[in-house]
Length: 43
Image (tube, rainbow, N blue to C red; front, top):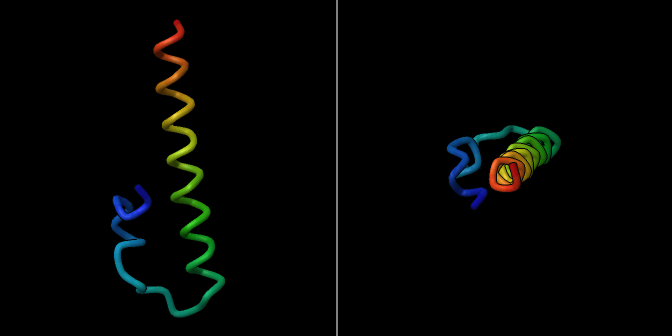
């Protein structure tokens, strides 16, 4: 699922630190979407 994040589709980052940061951002966005979707189903 993280491949849906266009920024992560290819290795554009110059450093490992920035690549890790973008991976963390994409993972966080995915988690927030999942939580929001489950909150909408329960209410």
